[in-house]
Image 1 (spheres, rainbow, N blue to C red):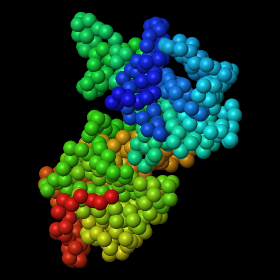
Image 2: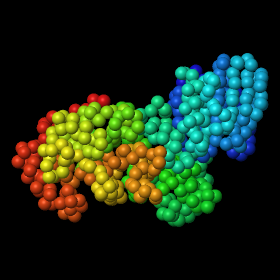
Image 3: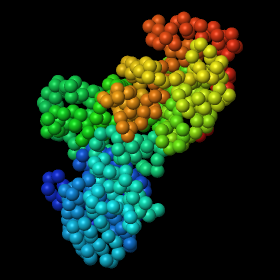
Image 4: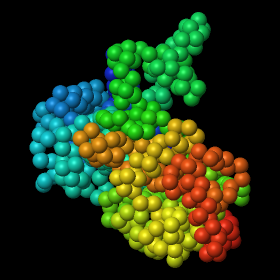
Length: 535
């Protein structure tokens, strides 16, 4: 096998043809997106994408190549509606009819099924919901097309995945269809690293066909007419070329200048791909999406690549606690108090509250004695009970009235306090806080005020754990600054009075109490050691 080329790619490029966008029959040579997908492909793949990048064509070719070359292959291809299913079947027939080399012998060739007697292999192409897939089936290759538009994807996939053989391949791809649902949730879990699936997000900016040739005069005309309302200045500053902006304008006109619809059809980020149907309470976010900055440390921990834990900086950690039984997730968001930017994120849906306390202690140690705030509702009390045994109490946030009592440790979110805590994050994101995590960015996008209940929470089918953790970090950062005293941290009198708990009088009383308890303000030297946390 050629280095970097899969066996399926060799077959596709050597034997298959395709009709290009100029209606010419050409050799099927993988384009940029198809080649990237082929190079990173695994046994379980999720592909949220912009329109017309050729991902479905690649998967059809891959499935056909396996049926022609591997004995006893059962390939199942499922689309979201009958018309799309017919088009997929027609593509497969066309590819077979136009194969470069001897034509394969065919057995069954119906409207749903094509069989290959020489390899005893079969391709079945169907529509989601038309039959109860999975029961009694054996599947070696599964391709789900436009899964975000399947009406009952969770139930259908439950049956399909049970039919896939242990070494079989599963490939799900789709353009966006709002936040929520099986495909969205699967992509969000894969983004955190807590999943067996490999996520391949495909944006339109990397597709070389999505640009329009311009003369020098046309370039000058366009650069003098960049529209803020269409976010053109912002994109140009990000490095989007004038040729790409010209193509984008043409597409916007075709879509009646519906910017949100364009972002869904041609996203440049996951949160554009999966747009909320409601209105996020976080309309302005300083999100830095440059590739390579936010890196995976392990399955639960992501961090800012450029960040080196500084001897002059100080850190605050906000934590949201879950039961650890695979439903909601325990999360920690870490902010640098001096640079005021997100530097780390820890997420797990399988860590019990007791063990989460140990993880918070490790993160606190690594970030030089970070100040930690834990949501004290429900399972949070169990985490706090263990954390006060493991970590210096003066570095665990508590109310000023009685920091010696466990019930006063942490941050309690109630109907009254939750809007205050969330508003702190809202203000920080709009003005100075920079975030790097696409998971947090996505959850901010789907965090809304429900129209029926007026509750502040994630849209149905979405998560908000990282939002709550980040809001806690934002809410307690002024208290953290007073405890940790980072250099160059500017705290105005107005900021001190943002919340009753942080009124000047309350803070002074709290600091005096902590001094009398001999727990303030010098941290244990172990928290200055710069040790890397174990995971």
